[in-house]
Length: 162
Image 1: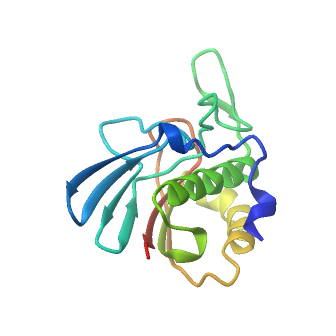
Image 2: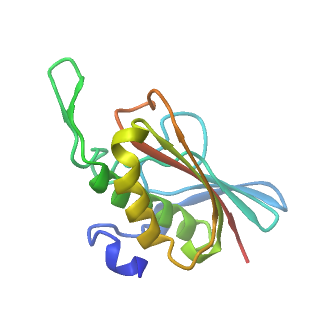
């Protein structure tokens, strides 16, 4: 089901991915197949057979743009597209999972941050249901005032690595 939703311009760039070993059971993961982190943190960190993804947003890896976003001259949000951002954030999560040796069906727990619960929850929840059909991951969805860039959704994931 998920394969049909991944944008065709998403290319796995494994030659540019890097992994640092903290010890035998821990590695940090960086990939060019998802938007670059905004700070000094990895896309993900392996610990034993668990994978912890940092907050993953909807910025596109190839141009750093947020799909469907329109800003005014001062950088204020004029318009955003929760549907486009949902598809983009799920594609970014999938890219990090795959770069880490995991996969969508190994997701255990999802924390979702929305900037406008009242306006966006119904659309997000419908799209989430399409991507997570049969996955049975635990989920928490919370509203936050803002995120570090003008995105409207961010995901934090815990998955298995086998």
